[in-house]
Length: 320
Image 1 (cartoon, rainbow, N blue to C red):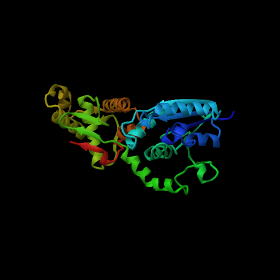
Image 2: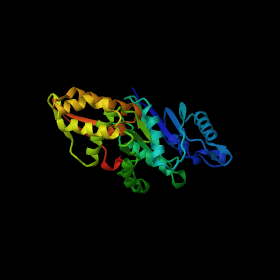
Image 3: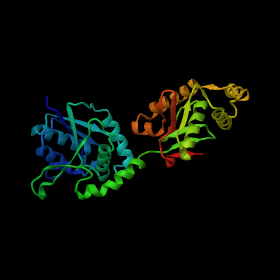
């Protein structure tokens, strides 16, 4: 069975074609160069001359079907406040592409010649980072303008000799870190905030997270936990954090105080249960695999001896 070929592209001003008395833009040219079964047009509403982008998208979709350049067109609007903001574009683009079905029977290509330079960078970042799909990579194409000779769709790779793409390579690498927001651990309020969103942790969960956040901030090694109980040193830390951030909730830490006083041991199942709850909440609130992997409490190792840590860089953690 042949694969279904799907083309993804932002719609740019050059794609307005006859609406602005111009020749065919990059998307129509790409479709004349290569056959695709489906085209997904991604756009942000704004005005170009007397036309809204929604009108350009409708014109483009109509031309594709009328000329039989593809069997099907789909339109997807994203809402952007700033079409040059990498963070905003990338988050919206990834959210959309995460919703696309990815199987052995579909081959996705993204035409990167339309849209702003920031949109172009985000396509490259999405493909090269594997965020689109590790199993089913995204193919990138750049459309050669007919005014420079015979047009064709050029497959884009960062190792290629395309001057503009090569110049973007360092920016793409830095963006992988720049696109990651910071996690703010507010000790006074007992609040964890990531991407301007408060993660609703219980007081004890907040104290656990602070413990591992401080270790990450200080570049400490992953911490190993094994056996059936947690160390007294860990319990004392959690107690002191709880007392500092939640001074009025003394009854909530009474059991922990008694365990420390009698030097009883906290079952490791309690520790693991709290870590699991924290990670589950982070996954629910962030809904983004890149952010989840950066800010969850990572658990590695074999049964009986596991290593716990937060994987993000120290620069991405603020403790105040």
